[in-house]
Image (cartoon, rainbow, N blue to C red; front, top):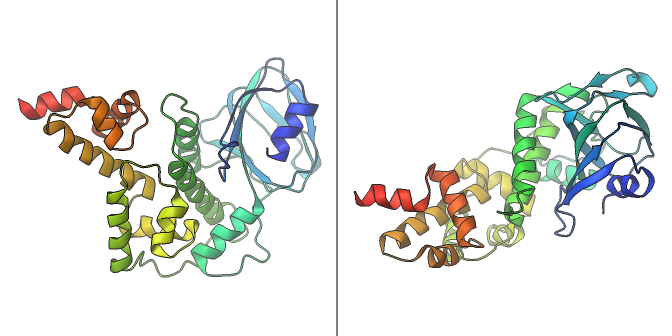
Length: 296
């Protein structure tokens, strides 16, 4: 369990956990949803990892130590707090507040930087002054990640969670680090032969739960380097491409008269309900309505 989440659970009873996600699965960016019904006054000890937080509702939350004393904010849709790790800090809220905290290690950040840029991560640091700062693009990414990863009815796959983790980290590196414009490798994506091998592998495994690392091995790359290279080549993340191919395969099976439960099974969805939810998300209509439209 991330040190910060463990600290809150053991030492700060004013903060109650409403959910911890991605910890059993070993996600690179697990997160916790926390609520203080009567506010809180917490001095966090230094933690060995970074975190990205935002106020979900209530507040305001105020910083009470160091050069950032007095910074205050509530549940603004573009607001966030970035903690680079290794520092103590104190926050207070005088009324009910709900907070989300996403946890990740400096080693993960460094590896994403090195694999994406080809440069050494020596001296790389995330900014320590992003306290109740605003970044609409970052919040859109974070909100989508939290919504998907916290969906217990239609759980995010490991591939989806890992892809979000890489893309969030790339955004932090590009906008909220001491290397605001990391030198990127040539944006060629994957060589055409390698890309075709990857697409063939995905096509052959539409019914299976395939982790990012397994697909990356087909390309001979690390998961993080593969994720960025694939996205440059295809214009979508590996997870998004896999989902679109599953939906297209499902359409083919539905037109052949397959039952929806069998379609879900053969296309890698955990249940008929999961399939219906994903189909609606991609096509804006449930499978039955789509089939009626096509057959009309």
